[in-house]
Amino acid sequence: MIVFDDSSLVNQQKYYSGLEKTRTHNPLYYVGPQEKEQFLAYLFERLRDRKLNLLVRNLFRPSYGGNRNYTLMYTLGHLMVSSDDDMRPYALVEDSPESLGPDEISRGKLLKASAKGYAKKSFDILAAFLDVLGKPVGEAPSNYDRGELIVDSSMDLETNASHGLARDNVLMLRSGLVSDTAGSKWPRPSDPAPRHRRA
Image 1 (tube, helix red, strand yellow):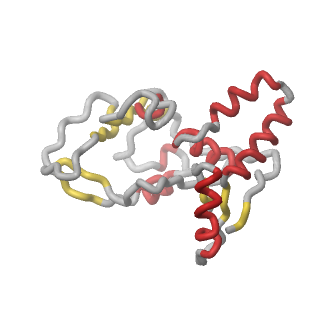
Image 2 (cartoon, rainbow, N blue to C red; image 1 turned 30 degrees about the vertical axis):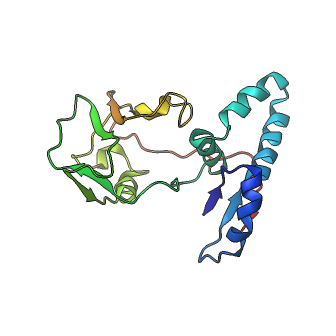
């Protein structure tokens, strides 16, 4: 498990000692402000073009998206599950759901805590993903949709607040021909893994 800390340096110094004292069953690694700066310095050195530094720093700015980009780089070539501290292991499912639009896989809405007409449901999404990962498309169950790629409406948000409060979220399946012999492949990193601290 790797913790990617999006805290300021002041907050990191305030709370890191508590994380350091926490015992875990499996190894826990920590990537905080100092490790992130080391990683950026490594990227800048590899790019060798100072004009690109601002662009790269913007990709890894303090935000959910920036923190997610660190996660993607640190886990390049490996199966990874990402979660945030405000995620919950269940979904709110509408009692009388609206019909999904064409090519719409799922739709989410912002709800008040006191809203009625919804039930909490837990789904093992990871197990469903692992059921087909690395297998030929032709072996996927018939109830799995096929398409070129999934488009997430929330991916347009630069940061959590840059476009205002997102009140809904839609996943769309972009149609396209997919061969029965197609399968998932994972890239392999050519460089050593970035440095991190073990907590």
